[in-house]
Amino acid sequence: SQELEQSPQSLIVQEGKNLTINCTSSKTLYGLYWYKQKYGEGLIFLMMLQKGGEEKSHEKITAKLDEKKQQSSLHITASQPSHAGIYLCGADSSASGTYKYIFGTGTRLKVLA
Amino acid sequence: KAGVTQTPRYLIKTRGQQVTLSCSPISGHRSVSWYQQTPGQGLQFLFEYFSETQRNKGNFPGRFSGRQFSNSRSEMNVSTLELGDSALYLCASSPWGYEQFFGPGTRLTVL
Figure (cartoon, rainbow over the protein chains, first blue to last red):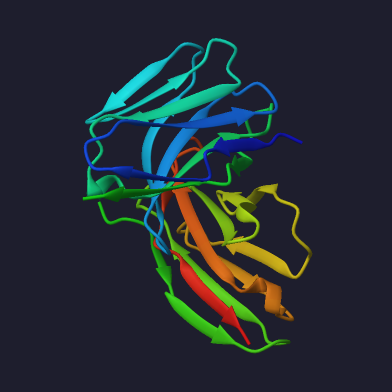
């Protein structure tokens, strides 16, 4: 079965610093999603990547899916306290596209003011 | 549009009891998925319903069941609760199954 591994598990950065979170899949990704979660709350959709080499940005967050479609990175530029939370990558693990989702273990981000 | 709503937000039950959680999707969304999130196992897929039919199922015991009504609202039931069922249960809705919109979750504590 497909698995998603995220690194690092946790991250503490000073406000204004850049950071990168990685998500590696054991199989080819057909759709990769990034979400942000505040502790104990629901997930907020950030972006979706489908094509190898695709890159998307939203405000100061950029996500890329590598050419081989087995790894994605999420980069935050000039981090702010509002970026703090848990970042999760998710993917549809069913080759037939019947939407059986799996998620990575999450990366807990803390931004120090 | 109103977002995904889940009720109740918090629930405390004892071992052996059963519980029913409710999820109202975004208007027009036909797919509803349920997830269990725990510190140890992370976010795990329970099942997905589309137009009242279970379309996909994760690896959970039969004590976990669900259903979807004609208005796309969904319920999840857990029977014979165990301590390990304590978790945040999240519901997500989607028009077709791709981009998912999550509710705030129901925090279940089993004593």
